[in-house]
Every structure is written in structure tokens, then in C-alpha cells.
Image (tube, rainbow, N blue to C red; front, side, top):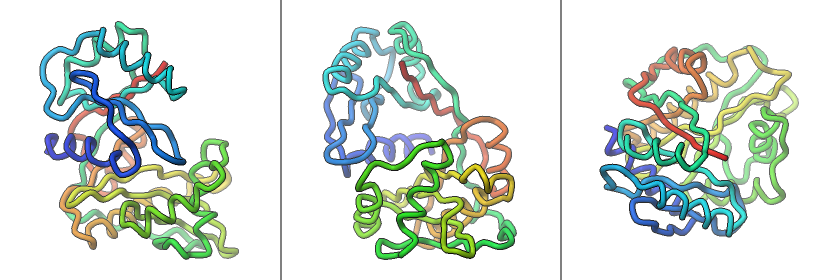
Length: 246
């Protein structure tokens, strides 16, 4: 299972980034608009990773003007953490969770409609903006158009919970690559929290992923409390996702 997830992690950025190799590490460099990517272990890399290789990647990230960030799975590449921390980065741990079965049903919250959002959906802009609003941010210009293009290309699936006015209160995505998909970016606007909207959106994404042939559906929870919420849908923790940043 972890090998399939590792293969997925190596594949998913390549639809919108180029890969630069630094020995046992791969730096994904964003091409076009969107969030900058990160570095992670090269597919199949084993053993200890020298701190010098981490520092080479960080120097390249500074040269490109992108965040000095690394992402990996602790159990798959145990030799990376020491090198990353020795270089001065801070490492954060997140439960890596895999869905058991088709997912458990959750009641749809009152007063909202949870549905998938297409590229030509009038709710696209609102659905794209909702997770940004969850963190007090606004999307970059052109983000909705970029996400719409990814939806048309089959690279992204978007779900949202809409209120009676057609505004999105919560939204998230899953990113299919063959028979594997990751649920990402689920966020609820602050005024609509504690209503079960994020869980309902995640359930919609899970159902959509299964309906489109995903055999393995997974996600990374922000912390143990959020992991317990995802457990209500049938997700279980199988490993630890690590994110390092300056």
C-alpha cells in the first residue's frame, strides 16, 4: 500500500511541474500558474540521505524563489528526517490515512446542497475560493480557470457544499492518478464551521472517487483530532506524512 502511495506521490505533480533530480531527491518545479511544489525522495530511493543533498535542493529552491519545502512518508523514507532537520528545517507530522471499503455514510447538513462541481459550473469560482477563505486567504487570479482546466482534463475532481444563495461554504478536491486518488484541500469558511460540512464534502469526494474506479483513496489529516473525524468516514491511519519547511 505504501509503495502505491509513493508511486502516486511521484506521479501526481508531473501533470503541472517539471522534475529536477538531486541524487536521492526530486524537486518538482511548478510550470505555469498555481502553488509552487516541493521536494521529495526520488522514487525508489533507499538508505540514508546526505544533508548535503538536502542543502543542494534548498539552494535551488532559493534560486527559484519558491518555498524551501519537503514532503515524504516517514515509514517509506526513514533516512530523510535527520538530514532535513540537520539542514535547519522544521518537520511537522500528519496522520496518513487510507479509506477502508466504500466509506461510511454521513447525514447531509441541513440547509446546504453537497455536489460535484464541473468546469462550466456557475459555482466554480465560489467552490475554489472556499478553502482559501478557510485560512484567511484569497486565490490567485486565474486559479478558478486553472482548476476548471484540470477538471476538464480529468486531473482534478471538485466537490462543494452550497448554501441557498449558491455560495460555497466548504469545498475540497481529489486528484486521481489511475486507480489511486488523494483527497486534498478540504476547507470550510469560518462562519460555517462545526456543521459537518467538511465531512460531507469529503464523503462526496470519496463516493466520486470510488465511482470513477479508485481502488485506493487516501488523505493526510492535519492532526489527530481531524484524523478522528475522518475515521467516521472509514479512514484509518497507516503511516505518518511529514512536511518540512523553513
